[in-house]
Image (cartoon, rainbow, N blue to C red):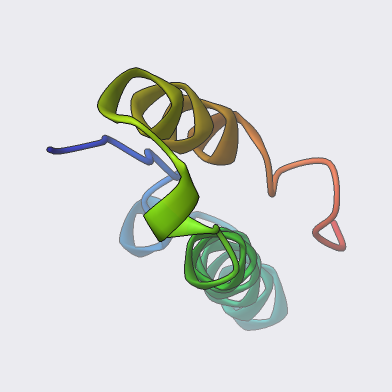
Length: 68
């Protein structure tokens, strides 16, 4: 099973050096939050459909919890 967890490409960030660093920190934070959610899923208790739904939910999360 696969899931796409898109994040803004920090390498394409423009602006000052600090703004570029913030873009990398934001991408890291989003992915880190999603990975932690994935690691905490009760995989043994989820059927394929439920797992796919959870993976989609994780892909939509993270953006609202990362510092901007």
